[in-house]
Length: 230
Length: 230
DNA sequence: CTCGTCACATTGTTGAACGGTCCAACGGCC
DNA sequence: GGCCGTTGGACCGTTCAACAATGTGACGAG
Image (cartoon, rainbow over all chains, first blue to last red; front, side, top):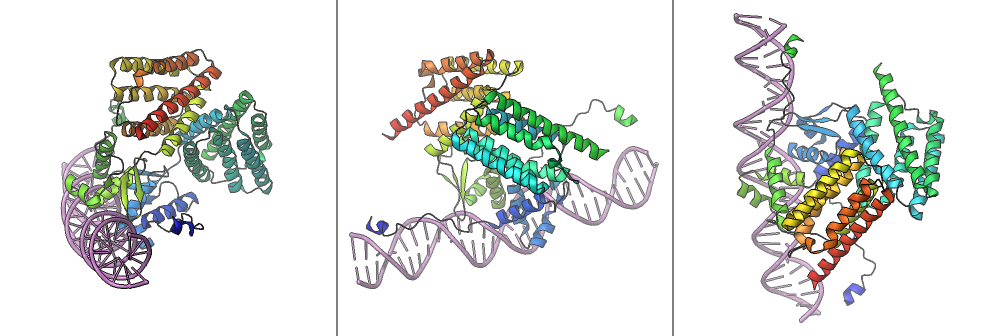
Protein backbone atom coordinates (compact mmCIF):
# COMPACT_ATOMS: atom_id res chain seq x y z
CA UNK A 1 0.00 0.00 0.00
CA UNK A 2 2.75 2.43 0.97
CA UNK A 3 4.61 1.67 -2.24
CA UNK A 4 1.47 2.30 -4.21
CA UNK A 5 0.94 5.64 -2.53
CA UNK A 6 4.34 6.81 -3.77
CA UNK A 7 3.36 5.99 -7.35
CA UNK A 8 0.34 8.20 -7.63
CA UNK A 9 1.58 9.68 -10.89
CA UNK A 10 1.57 6.36 -12.66
CA UNK A 11 -1.28 5.57 -14.97
CA UNK A 12 -1.84 2.60 -17.20
CA UNK A 13 0.07 3.26 -20.40
CA UNK A 14 -0.12 1.54 -23.72
CA UNK A 15 3.00 0.28 -25.45
CA UNK A 16 3.92 -0.20 -29.04
CA UNK A 17 2.55 -3.73 -29.00
CA UNK A 18 1.42 -3.85 -32.59
CA UNK A 19 2.16 -6.99 -34.52
CA UNK A 20 3.69 -6.68 -37.96
CA UNK A 21 0.60 -8.26 -39.42
CA UNK A 22 -1.51 -5.45 -37.98
CA UNK A 23 0.85 -2.83 -39.36
CA UNK A 24 0.67 -4.44 -42.76
CA UNK A 25 -3.12 -4.49 -42.50
CA UNK A 26 -3.22 -0.80 -41.67
CA UNK A 27 -0.85 -0.03 -44.52
CA UNK A 28 -2.98 -1.88 -47.03
CA UNK A 29 -6.08 -0.23 -45.60
CA UNK A 30 -4.73 3.25 -46.20
CA UNK A 31 -3.60 2.25 -49.68
CA UNK A 32 -7.14 1.13 -50.43
CA UNK A 33 -8.80 4.17 -48.88
CA UNK A 34 -6.63 6.74 -50.63
CA UNK A 35 -7.16 5.07 -53.96
CA UNK A 36 -3.64 3.76 -54.48
CA UNK A 37 -5.18 0.31 -54.75
CA UNK A 38 -8.12 0.52 -57.09
CA UNK A 39 -11.20 -1.70 -56.81
CA UNK A 40 -10.68 -5.10 -58.37
CA UNK A 41 -6.94 -5.11 -57.80
CA UNK A 42 -5.82 -8.54 -56.61
CA UNK A 43 -3.74 -8.64 -53.43
CA UNK A 44 -0.92 -11.00 -54.35
CA UNK A 45 0.65 -12.38 -51.22
CA UNK A 46 4.12 -12.82 -52.69
CA UNK A 47 4.43 -9.38 -54.19
CA UNK A 48 3.18 -7.68 -51.05
CA UNK A 49 5.51 -9.80 -48.96
CA UNK A 50 8.59 -8.95 -50.99
CA UNK A 51 7.79 -5.27 -51.46
CA UNK A 52 7.08 -4.78 -47.76
CA UNK A 53 9.94 -7.01 -46.70
CA UNK A 54 7.89 -9.39 -44.59
CA UNK A 55 7.03 -13.04 -44.77
CA UNK A 56 4.17 -14.35 -46.84
CA UNK A 57 2.55 -15.79 -43.75
CA UNK A 58 2.52 -12.37 -42.16
CA UNK A 59 0.86 -10.96 -45.25
CA UNK A 60 -1.72 -13.73 -45.07
CA UNK A 61 -2.46 -12.77 -41.48
CA UNK A 62 -2.74 -9.13 -42.50
CA UNK A 63 -5.19 -9.95 -45.26
CA UNK A 64 -7.22 -12.11 -42.89
CA UNK A 65 -7.36 -9.25 -40.41
CA UNK A 66 -8.36 -6.92 -43.23
CA UNK A 67 -11.11 -9.35 -44.10
CA UNK A 68 -13.01 -8.10 -41.04
CA UNK A 69 -13.87 -4.97 -42.96
CA UNK A 70 -15.58 -5.30 -46.28
CA UNK A 71 -12.87 -3.43 -48.13
CA UNK A 72 -11.69 -6.67 -49.71
CA UNK A 73 -13.39 -9.74 -51.08
CA UNK A 74 -11.97 -13.18 -50.41
CA UNK A 75 -12.43 -16.30 -52.47
CA UNK A 76 -11.00 -19.70 -51.86
CA UNK A 77 -7.88 -20.45 -53.93
CA UNK A 78 -8.38 -17.15 -55.68
CA UNK A 79 -7.09 -14.81 -53.03
CA UNK A 80 -8.29 -11.38 -52.04
CA UNK A 81 -9.14 -8.46 -54.28
CA UNK A 82 -10.00 -4.88 -53.42
CA UNK A 83 -13.77 -4.67 -53.12
CA UNK A 84 -15.61 -3.34 -56.13
CA UNK A 85 -18.34 -0.85 -55.27
CA UNK A 86 -21.66 -2.19 -56.45
CA UNK A 87 -24.94 -0.40 -56.55
CA UNK A 88 -26.36 -3.15 -54.37
CA UNK A 89 -23.64 -2.69 -51.80
CA UNK A 90 -24.27 1.04 -51.78
CA UNK A 91 -27.98 0.45 -51.29
CA UNK A 92 -27.26 -1.90 -48.41
CA UNK A 93 -25.05 0.72 -46.85
CA UNK A 94 -27.64 3.43 -47.21
CA UNK A 95 -30.37 1.15 -45.87
CA UNK A 96 -28.29 0.70 -42.76
CA UNK A 97 -27.61 4.44 -42.54
CA UNK A 98 -31.25 5.30 -42.97
CA UNK A 99 -32.32 2.86 -40.30
CA UNK A 100 -29.70 3.91 -37.81
CA UNK A 101 -29.98 7.65 -38.30
CA UNK A 102 -33.74 7.82 -38.45
CA UNK A 103 -33.91 5.65 -35.37
CA UNK A 104 -31.35 7.82 -33.60
CA UNK A 105 -33.17 11.11 -34.12
CA UNK A 106 -36.47 9.49 -33.15
CA UNK A 107 -35.23 9.20 -29.59
CA UNK A 108 -35.07 12.02 -27.05
CA UNK A 109 -31.71 13.75 -27.29
CA UNK A 110 -29.51 14.80 -24.39
CA UNK A 111 -27.83 18.18 -24.22
CA UNK A 112 -24.31 16.95 -24.89
CA UNK A 113 -25.44 14.99 -27.94
CA UNK A 114 -27.15 18.08 -29.33
CA UNK A 115 -24.02 20.10 -28.65
CA UNK A 116 -21.98 17.51 -30.54
CA UNK A 117 -24.31 17.71 -33.51
CA UNK A 118 -24.15 21.51 -33.47
CA UNK A 119 -20.38 21.42 -33.44
CA UNK A 120 -20.34 18.91 -36.31
CA UNK A 121 -22.70 21.16 -38.26
CA UNK A 122 -20.36 24.11 -37.80
CA UNK A 123 -17.45 22.01 -39.03
CA UNK A 124 -19.46 21.01 -42.06
CA UNK A 125 -20.32 24.61 -42.91
CA UNK A 126 -16.68 25.60 -42.69
CA UNK A 127 -15.65 22.68 -44.89
CA UNK A 128 -18.33 23.63 -47.41
CA UNK A 129 -16.88 27.14 -47.57
CA UNK A 130 -13.40 25.82 -48.24
CA UNK A 131 -14.68 23.53 -50.97
CA UNK A 132 -12.41 20.52 -50.50
CA UNK A 133 -14.57 17.58 -51.61
CA UNK A 134 -12.71 15.04 -49.51
CA UNK A 135 -13.08 17.19 -46.43
CA UNK A 136 -16.76 17.83 -47.08
CA UNK A 137 -17.47 14.13 -47.32
CA UNK A 138 -15.61 13.54 -44.06
CA UNK A 139 -17.43 16.31 -42.22
CA UNK A 140 -20.73 15.19 -43.68
CA UNK A 141 -20.18 11.71 -42.29
CA UNK A 142 -19.04 13.19 -38.98
CA UNK A 143 -22.30 15.12 -38.71
CA UNK A 144 -24.37 12.00 -39.18
CA UNK A 145 -22.14 10.07 -36.80
CA UNK A 146 -22.89 12.76 -34.23
CA UNK A 147 -26.60 12.11 -34.61
CA UNK A 148 -26.08 8.37 -34.22
CA UNK A 149 -24.32 9.04 -30.94
CA UNK A 150 -27.79 9.72 -29.60
CA UNK A 151 -28.21 5.97 -29.19
CA UNK A 152 -25.72 6.26 -26.36
CA UNK A 153 -23.97 3.03 -27.29
CA UNK A 154 -20.28 2.67 -28.05
CA UNK A 155 -20.96 -0.49 -29.97
CA UNK A 156 -23.41 1.21 -32.28
CA UNK A 157 -20.99 4.09 -32.76
CA UNK A 158 -18.29 1.62 -33.71
CA UNK A 159 -20.64 -0.09 -36.13
CA UNK A 160 -21.55 3.22 -37.71
CA UNK A 161 -17.88 4.15 -37.96
CA UNK A 162 -17.34 0.94 -39.89
CA UNK A 163 -20.14 1.87 -42.26
CA UNK A 164 -18.62 5.33 -42.65
CA UNK A 165 -15.25 3.91 -43.64
CA UNK A 166 -16.85 1.75 -46.29
CA UNK A 167 -18.97 4.61 -47.48
CA UNK A 168 -16.10 7.04 -47.89
CA UNK A 169 -14.24 4.36 -49.81
CA UNK A 170 -17.20 3.79 -52.08
CA UNK A 171 -17.74 7.48 -52.67
CA UNK A 172 -14.08 8.11 -53.39
CA UNK A 173 -13.95 5.11 -55.70
CA UNK A 174 -17.15 5.84 -57.57
CA UNK A 175 -16.61 9.53 -57.96
CA UNK A 176 -13.66 9.49 -60.29
CA UNK A 177 -14.90 12.94 -61.19
CA UNK A 178 -15.91 15.50 -58.58
CA UNK A 179 -18.85 15.11 -56.29
CA UNK A 180 -19.72 18.79 -56.28
CA UNK A 181 -21.61 18.42 -53.07
CA UNK A 182 -21.40 22.10 -52.30
CA UNK A 183 -22.96 22.90 -55.65
CA UNK A 184 -26.28 21.81 -54.25
CA UNK A 185 -27.38 24.69 -52.09
CA UNK A 186 -29.98 22.43 -50.51
CA UNK A 187 -27.25 20.15 -49.20
CA UNK A 188 -26.29 22.41 -46.33
CA UNK A 189 -29.85 23.52 -45.75
CA UNK A 190 -30.95 19.92 -45.20
CA UNK A 191 -28.40 19.49 -42.46
CA UNK A 192 -29.45 22.72 -40.82
CA UNK A 193 -33.07 21.58 -40.80
CA UNK A 194 -32.12 18.27 -39.24
CA UNK A 195 -30.18 19.97 -36.50
CA UNK A 196 -32.95 22.45 -35.83
CA UNK A 197 -35.55 19.70 -35.47
CA UNK A 198 -33.32 17.72 -33.10
CA UNK A 199 -32.53 20.76 -31.00
CA UNK A 200 -36.25 21.50 -30.79
CA UNK A 201 -36.87 17.89 -29.67
CA UNK A 202 -39.28 17.57 -32.57
CA UNK A 203 -38.59 13.91 -33.22
CA UNK A 204 -41.20 13.38 -35.88
CA UNK A 205 -39.89 16.24 -38.00
CA UNK A 206 -36.28 15.22 -37.39
CA UNK A 207 -37.01 11.68 -38.50
CA UNK A 208 -38.73 12.91 -41.65
CA UNK A 209 -35.90 15.33 -42.44
CA UNK A 210 -33.26 12.64 -42.04
CA UNK A 211 -35.22 10.22 -44.18
CA UNK A 212 -35.71 12.84 -46.89
CA UNK A 213 -32.06 13.85 -46.69
CA UNK A 214 -30.80 10.32 -47.13
CA UNK A 215 -33.23 9.56 -49.91
CA UNK A 216 -32.17 12.78 -51.58
CA UNK A 217 -28.53 11.77 -51.20
CA UNK A 218 -29.25 8.42 -52.78
CA UNK A 219 -31.08 10.15 -55.62
CA UNK A 220 -28.11 12.47 -56.22
CA UNK A 221 -25.76 9.53 -56.17
CA UNK A 222 -27.81 7.52 -58.62
CA UNK A 223 -28.02 10.44 -60.98
CA UNK A 224 -24.27 10.81 -60.86
CA UNK A 225 -23.65 7.11 -61.34
CA UNK A 226 -26.02 6.90 -64.29
CA UNK A 227 -24.35 9.94 -65.78
CA UNK A 228 -20.96 8.31 -65.30
CA UNK A 229 -22.11 5.16 -67.10
CA UNK A 230 -23.25 7.15 -70.10
CA UNK B 1 -26.65 -17.15 -76.37
CA UNK B 2 -28.11 -20.41 -77.62
CA UNK B 3 -26.03 -22.38 -75.16
CA UNK B 4 -27.21 -20.15 -72.34
CA UNK B 5 -30.81 -20.72 -73.30
CA UNK B 6 -30.39 -24.44 -72.76
CA UNK B 7 -29.12 -23.86 -69.23
CA UNK B 8 -32.12 -22.10 -67.82
CA UNK B 9 -32.28 -24.47 -64.88
CA UNK B 10 -28.83 -23.55 -63.65
CA UNK B 11 -28.53 -21.20 -60.76
CA UNK B 12 -25.46 -19.98 -58.95
CA UNK B 13 -24.57 -22.60 -56.40
CA UNK B 14 -22.14 -22.49 -53.53
CA UNK B 15 -19.51 -25.16 -53.09
CA UNK B 16 -17.75 -26.65 -50.11
CA UNK B 17 -14.96 -24.12 -50.38
CA UNK B 18 -14.26 -23.80 -46.69
CA UNK B 19 -10.66 -23.47 -45.64
CA UNK B 20 -9.35 -25.57 -42.80
CA UNK B 21 -8.77 -22.43 -40.80
CA UNK B 22 -12.44 -21.54 -41.07
CA UNK B 23 -13.48 -25.01 -39.97
CA UNK B 24 -11.18 -24.77 -36.99
CA UNK B 25 -12.62 -21.35 -36.19
CA UNK B 26 -16.17 -22.71 -36.30
CA UNK B 27 -15.16 -25.64 -34.14
CA UNK B 28 -13.61 -23.41 -31.50
CA UNK B 29 -16.64 -21.13 -31.69
CA UNK B 30 -19.03 -23.94 -30.88
CA UNK B 31 -16.76 -25.12 -28.09
CA UNK B 32 -16.89 -21.64 -26.59
CA UNK B 33 -20.61 -21.21 -27.04
CA UNK B 34 -21.59 -24.55 -25.55
CA UNK B 35 -19.39 -23.96 -22.55
CA UNK B 36 -16.75 -26.59 -23.27
CA UNK B 37 -14.20 -23.79 -23.21
CA UNK B 38 -14.85 -21.72 -20.14
CA UNK B 39 -14.13 -17.99 -19.94
CA UNK B 40 -10.49 -17.26 -19.22
CA UNK B 41 -9.26 -20.46 -20.81
CA UNK B 42 -6.13 -19.75 -22.87
CA UNK B 43 -6.17 -20.97 -26.46
CA UNK B 44 -2.76 -22.61 -26.81
CA UNK B 45 -1.83 -22.82 -30.45
CA UNK B 46 0.30 -25.92 -30.10
CA UNK B 47 -2.20 -27.98 -28.15
CA UNK B 48 -5.06 -27.05 -30.46
CA UNK B 49 -2.90 -27.83 -33.46
CA UNK B 50 -1.92 -31.29 -32.23
CA UNK B 51 -5.34 -32.25 -30.91
CA UNK B 52 -7.08 -31.19 -34.12
CA UNK B 53 -4.33 -32.56 -36.31
CA UNK B 54 -3.60 -29.35 -38.17
CA UNK B 55 -0.64 -27.05 -38.40
CA UNK B 56 0.03 -24.33 -35.88
CA UNK B 57 -0.16 -21.71 -38.63
CA UNK B 58 -3.64 -22.88 -39.51
CA UNK B 59 -4.66 -22.58 -35.88
CA UNK B 60 -3.22 -19.06 -35.81
CA UNK B 61 -5.35 -18.16 -38.81
CA UNK B 62 -8.39 -19.68 -37.14
CA UNK B 63 -7.81 -17.67 -33.98
CA UNK B 64 -7.31 -14.52 -36.04
CA UNK B 65 -10.59 -15.17 -37.81
CA UNK B 66 -12.24 -15.80 -34.47
CA UNK B 67 -10.88 -12.47 -33.31
CA UNK B 68 -13.56 -10.78 -35.42
CA UNK B 69 -16.11 -11.71 -32.83
CA UNK B 70 -15.53 -10.66 -29.28
CA UNK B 71 -15.66 -14.20 -27.98
CA UNK B 72 -11.91 -14.14 -27.39
CA UNK B 73 -9.46 -11.55 -26.19
CA UNK B 74 -6.07 -11.18 -27.81
CA UNK B 75 -2.93 -9.80 -26.26
CA UNK B 76 0.46 -9.47 -27.84
CA UNK B 77 2.86 -12.24 -26.89
CA UNK B 78 0.24 -13.59 -24.53
CA UNK B 79 -2.06 -15.26 -26.99
CA UNK B 80 -5.82 -15.50 -26.99
CA UNK B 81 -8.09 -16.42 -24.12
CA UNK B 82 -11.81 -17.06 -24.05
CA UNK B 83 -13.52 -13.77 -23.22
CA UNK B 84 -14.52 -13.25 -19.62
CA UNK B 85 -17.99 -11.76 -19.22
CA UNK B 86 -17.66 -8.45 -17.43
CA UNK B 87 -20.43 -6.33 -16.08
CA UNK B 88 -19.16 -3.49 -18.24
CA UNK B 89 -19.27 -5.64 -21.34
CA UNK B 90 -22.81 -6.69 -20.51
CA UNK B 91 -23.81 -3.07 -20.03
CA UNK B 92 -22.27 -2.16 -23.38
CA UNK B 93 -24.21 -4.98 -24.98
CA UNK B 94 -27.47 -3.92 -23.43
CA UNK B 95 -26.86 -0.27 -24.32
CA UNK B 96 -26.56 -1.34 -27.92
CA UNK B 97 -29.66 -3.51 -27.63
CA UNK B 98 -31.68 -0.77 -26.06
CA UNK B 99 -30.68 1.74 -28.72
CA UNK B 100 -31.31 -0.60 -31.61
CA UNK B 101 -34.59 -2.06 -30.39
CA UNK B 102 -36.11 1.16 -29.15
CA UNK B 103 -35.14 2.82 -32.40
CA UNK B 104 -36.58 -0.07 -34.39
CA UNK B 105 -40.02 0.01 -32.79
CA UNK B 106 -40.11 3.80 -33.07
CA UNK B 107 -40.39 3.47 -36.84
CA UNK B 108 -43.54 2.56 -38.74
CA UNK B 109 -43.74 -1.18 -39.14
CA UNK B 110 -44.66 -3.07 -42.31
CA UNK B 111 -47.08 -5.98 -42.33
CA UNK B 112 -44.47 -8.67 -42.91
CA UNK B 113 -42.30 -7.38 -40.09
CA UNK B 114 -45.27 -7.47 -37.73
CA UNK B 115 -46.07 -10.99 -38.88
CA UNK B 116 -42.49 -12.00 -38.16
CA UNK B 117 -42.70 -10.57 -34.67
CA UNK B 118 -45.98 -12.35 -34.04
CA UNK B 119 -44.49 -15.63 -35.15
CA UNK B 120 -41.46 -15.09 -32.93
CA UNK B 121 -43.76 -14.34 -30.01
CA UNK B 122 -45.63 -17.60 -30.56
CA UNK B 123 -42.32 -19.49 -30.61
CA UNK B 124 -41.34 -17.83 -27.37
CA UNK B 125 -44.58 -18.77 -25.67
CA UNK B 126 -44.18 -22.38 -26.74
CA UNK B 127 -40.59 -22.42 -25.47
CA UNK B 128 -41.71 -20.93 -22.16
CA UNK B 129 -44.22 -23.74 -21.80
CA UNK B 130 -41.54 -26.36 -22.38
CA UNK B 131 -39.26 -24.73 -19.86
CA UNK B 132 -35.87 -25.34 -21.50
CA UNK B 133 -33.77 -22.37 -20.38
CA UNK B 134 -31.44 -22.53 -23.36
CA UNK B 135 -34.34 -22.59 -25.75
CA UNK B 136 -36.12 -19.74 -23.98
CA UNK B 137 -33.04 -17.54 -24.24
CA UNK B 138 -32.74 -18.35 -27.94
CA UNK B 139 -36.40 -17.62 -28.65
CA UNK B 140 -36.24 -14.47 -26.55
CA UNK B 141 -33.35 -13.19 -28.66
CA UNK B 142 -35.17 -14.26 -31.82
CA UNK B 143 -38.17 -12.16 -30.81
CA UNK B 144 -36.07 -9.07 -30.35
CA UNK B 145 -34.21 -9.77 -33.58
CA UNK B 146 -37.59 -9.81 -35.30
CA UNK B 147 -38.30 -6.31 -34.02
CA UNK B 148 -34.91 -5.09 -35.22
CA UNK B 149 -35.77 -6.33 -38.68
CA UNK B 150 -38.06 -3.31 -38.84
CA UNK B 151 -35.03 -1.24 -39.78
CA UNK B 152 -35.14 -3.05 -43.11
CA UNK B 153 -31.38 -3.37 -43.29
CA UNK B 154 -29.45 -6.61 -43.71
CA UNK B 155 -26.38 -4.98 -42.27
CA UNK B 156 -28.15 -3.98 -39.10
CA UNK B 157 -29.66 -7.45 -38.81
CA UNK B 158 -26.18 -8.93 -39.12
CA UNK B 159 -24.87 -6.55 -36.50
CA UNK B 160 -27.69 -7.47 -34.16
CA UNK B 161 -27.07 -11.16 -34.76
CA UNK B 162 -23.49 -10.62 -33.70
CA UNK B 163 -24.69 -8.97 -30.50
CA UNK B 164 -27.07 -11.87 -29.93
CA UNK B 165 -24.28 -14.43 -30.20
CA UNK B 166 -22.22 -12.57 -27.64
CA UNK B 167 -25.21 -12.15 -25.42
CA UNK B 168 -26.17 -15.79 -25.41
CA UNK B 169 -22.56 -16.65 -24.60
CA UNK B 170 -22.53 -14.20 -21.72
CA UNK B 171 -25.82 -15.42 -20.35
CA UNK B 172 -24.80 -19.05 -20.59
CA UNK B 173 -21.47 -18.29 -18.98
CA UNK B 174 -22.80 -16.13 -16.18
CA UNK B 175 -25.74 -18.32 -15.31
CA UNK B 176 -23.91 -21.26 -13.88
CA UNK B 177 -27.15 -21.82 -12.07
CA UNK B 178 -30.53 -21.56 -13.78
CA UNK B 179 -31.92 -18.40 -15.19
CA UNK B 180 -35.48 -19.21 -14.28
CA UNK B 181 -36.78 -16.80 -16.84
CA UNK B 182 -40.17 -18.44 -16.97
CA UNK B 183 -40.51 -18.02 -13.22
CA UNK B 184 -41.19 -14.35 -13.82
CA UNK B 185 -44.74 -14.23 -15.03
CA UNK B 186 -44.15 -10.66 -16.19
CA UNK B 187 -41.49 -11.86 -18.60
CA UNK B 188 -43.94 -13.17 -21.18
CA UNK B 189 -46.42 -10.42 -20.51
CA UNK B 190 -43.82 -7.76 -21.37
CA UNK B 191 -43.25 -9.36 -24.75
CA UNK B 192 -46.97 -9.52 -25.41
CA UNK B 193 -47.33 -5.85 -24.62
CA UNK B 194 -44.48 -4.95 -26.97
CA UNK B 195 -46.05 -6.91 -29.79
CA UNK B 196 -49.46 -5.41 -29.17
CA UNK B 197 -48.11 -1.88 -29.29
CA UNK B 198 -46.21 -2.55 -32.50
CA UNK B 199 -49.18 -4.19 -34.15
CA UNK B 200 -51.29 -1.19 -33.16
CA UNK B 201 -48.68 1.13 -34.71
CA UNK B 202 -48.47 2.88 -31.36
CA UNK B 203 -44.77 3.74 -31.61
CA UNK B 204 -44.56 5.80 -28.45
CA UNK B 205 -45.99 3.01 -26.32
CA UNK B 206 -43.90 0.39 -28.08
CA UNK B 207 -40.73 2.36 -27.48
CA UNK B 208 -41.56 2.78 -23.81
CA UNK B 209 -42.43 -0.91 -23.42
CA UNK B 210 -39.18 -1.99 -25.04
CA UNK B 211 -37.18 0.38 -22.89
CA UNK B 212 -38.90 -0.81 -19.74
CA UNK B 213 -38.48 -4.42 -20.77
CA UNK B 214 -34.75 -4.08 -21.35
CA UNK B 215 -34.22 -2.11 -18.17
CA UNK B 216 -36.17 -4.75 -16.32
CA UNK B 217 -34.04 -7.47 -17.90
CA UNK B 218 -30.88 -5.66 -16.81
CA UNK B 219 -32.29 -5.31 -13.31
CA UNK B 220 -33.08 -9.05 -13.17
CA UNK B 221 -29.61 -9.84 -14.42
CA UNK B 222 -27.91 -7.60 -11.90
CA UNK B 223 -29.89 -9.09 -9.07
CA UNK B 224 -28.84 -12.54 -10.19
CA UNK B 225 -25.20 -11.55 -10.58
CA UNK B 226 -25.08 -9.90 -7.19
CA UNK B 227 -26.70 -12.95 -5.69
CA UNK B 228 -24.12 -15.14 -7.40
CA UNK B 229 -21.27 -13.08 -5.97
CA UNK B 230 -22.59 -13.48 -2.45
C1' DC C 1 -16.12 -22.78 -82.30
C1' DT C 2 -15.77 -26.17 -78.72
C1' DC C 3 -13.37 -29.01 -76.00
C1' DG C 4 -9.36 -31.41 -73.79
C1' DT C 5 -4.79 -30.79 -72.29
C1' DC C 6 -1.00 -28.84 -70.30
C1' DA C 7 2.08 -25.66 -68.11
C1' DC C 8 2.21 -21.81 -64.96
C1' DA C 9 0.78 -18.78 -61.17
C1' DT C 10 -1.19 -18.44 -56.83
C1' DT C 11 -3.19 -19.97 -52.82
C1' DG C 12 -3.73 -23.41 -48.82
C1' DT C 13 -1.27 -26.01 -45.60
C1' DT C 14 2.51 -28.04 -43.36
C1' DG C 15 6.85 -28.41 -40.71
C1' DA C 16 10.75 -26.58 -38.67
C1' DA C 17 13.35 -23.09 -36.84
C1' DC C 18 14.85 -18.71 -34.18
C1' DG C 19 14.34 -14.70 -31.40
C1' DG C 20 11.48 -12.27 -28.14
C1' DT C 21 8.34 -11.93 -24.50
C1' DC C 22 5.83 -13.44 -20.51
C1' DC C 23 5.77 -15.90 -16.20
C1' DA C 24 6.90 -18.29 -12.15
C1' DA C 25 10.37 -19.94 -9.18
C1' DC C 26 14.65 -19.57 -7.02
C1' DG C 27 18.11 -17.35 -4.42
C1' DG C 28 20.80 -13.33 -2.62
C1' DC C 29 20.52 -9.15 -0.09
C1' DC C 30 19.10 -5.63 3.03
C1' DG D 1 10.16 -10.93 5.84
C1' DG D 2 10.17 -8.15 1.79
C1' DC D 3 12.60 -6.66 -2.43
C1' DC D 4 15.12 -7.54 -6.56
C1' DG D 5 18.12 -9.80 -10.15
C1' DT D 6 18.62 -14.12 -12.37
C1' DT D 7 17.34 -18.14 -14.54
C1' DG D 8 14.79 -21.42 -17.11
C1' DG D 9 10.82 -22.85 -19.54
C1' DA D 10 6.51 -22.12 -22.06
C1' DC D 11 4.56 -19.74 -25.59
C1' DC D 12 4.02 -16.36 -29.20
C1' DG D 13 5.55 -13.73 -33.44
C1' DT D 14 7.86 -14.28 -37.54
C1' DT D 15 10.48 -16.31 -41.17
C1' DC D 16 11.67 -19.75 -44.56
C1' DA D 17 11.15 -23.67 -47.51
C1' DA D 18 8.40 -26.93 -49.41
C1' DC D 19 4.35 -29.50 -51.35
C1' DA D 20 -0.49 -30.16 -52.61
C1' DA D 21 -4.55 -28.29 -54.58
C1' DT D 22 -6.78 -25.14 -57.32
C1' DG D 23 -7.52 -21.42 -60.65
C1' DT D 24 -6.04 -19.41 -65.28
C1' DG D 25 -4.76 -18.87 -69.69
C1' DA D 26 -2.85 -20.66 -73.93
C1' DC D 27 -2.40 -24.04 -77.30
C1' DG D 28 -3.90 -27.42 -80.35
C1' DA D 29 -7.17 -31.30 -82.09
C1' DG D 30 -11.40 -32.26 -83.73
